[in-house]
Image (tube, rainbow over all chains, first blue to last red; front, side):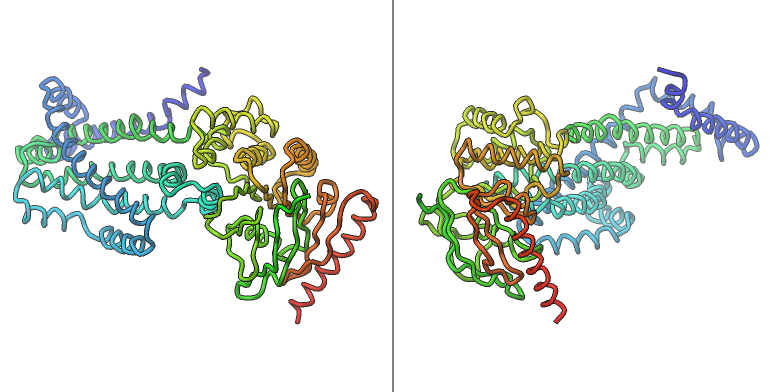
Length: 252
Length: 250
């Protein structure tokens, strides 16, 4: 690896910017005090302490569990809607409209409504995650179904592939990249939304612990947990979704 | 020779009549080229022959059986389209093997037959390549292999080399000619390139301007010199192009 290559890989410019940010941050922290803006060192110490105590795994796992349930259900639902959109033009139109309405609905609506419906329980963040990610994933799948090359389907007809065979050999492979793209965006959204819903009524999860840290005036822990959230997001992107995308693009 | 394909008074209307009334027969083992000005309905006629689209009038008989749209007849029709229409996520072998599934060929047999026909089309050694990794000419070879693998009663080709450069085009013309001689298949080949038709077809059908009728049916058996034939057909096609433009101007 040449110097230039390794510089590219480490994003040296970004690193330089990070150093600058940390410097400015330290100065502002000294100026305004630890409650408003804790020092970078205090945040790092906070991170080390939750890793050492194992608290990091407890709250991350709780958040991820809710995301997996809510987001997973949204993906399953979106797949069913996509299948419906493939089979019927009418269903496709309805899905389009429903997606438009859901996309226009605020996160806060679902948080409040889910607290009314499910009380202060696990189900509030799960339901909120479901309702927010469903339109994103569904819109992508429907777009994938619509973009299936008609000429390939016609080829399937000429060679008399059955409906099931056409679905498996033509429709699914055409739609998969759209599904993965939708899931990638949807998962990011799920993580951001579910932690907000965790502010209310649950006693675990990254959102809960951030809000709790604020209440007991431990601002450095708010920052530490924000860092955890960012790391989880980046890990999911690079380890899961990029891997899947690369696998799918094998034949290109 | 036995009549393989009979086109009887076939016509097609969309908003306007595209094909007026066309009748001709194709004998078994014949290589028939459908010629005509652009937009005269050649592709539409081929799609009717393949049972992809229904005709408005008339009928098409393949071995005496009526071809209807949606492929519910028992005859086998292989089609090579203008584009290769290979599934990009499957290897060339898998692409060919896929169309053997509906014929009830067992997996091992599908694989063997796919390799056999890929080799016939000059693709030995490329069986495991994905379409995106080979050239346009090779993709059309694979599409031809796929069409031949079902052992079709008739092979329909719709300007299959339109997207290829001149050199590849000439190579593929020779290849199709060779494959035709080796397999003895009946071929209907649509093209607007007169030299191409004269170089490979045994029978040339020149269609008129839209709505299409048969302008001329020529046996390309060497009795007329090829250069003369090319000149005559060029004159004809220019007349038809002018007629089509005249009709549009009116």
